[in-house]
Length: 32
Image (cartoon, rainbow, N blue to C red; front, side):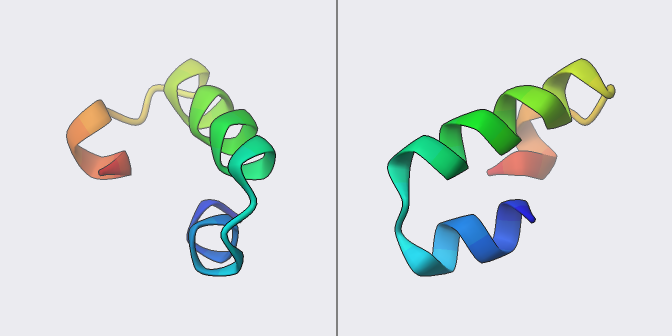
């Protein structure tokens, strides 16, 4: 969902899914 949020441009969704990814152990480098 993080990639979809980035494509559709929704700032709220991008922020929310990035935070969930960090909680799940995905690194900041992988998110960027």
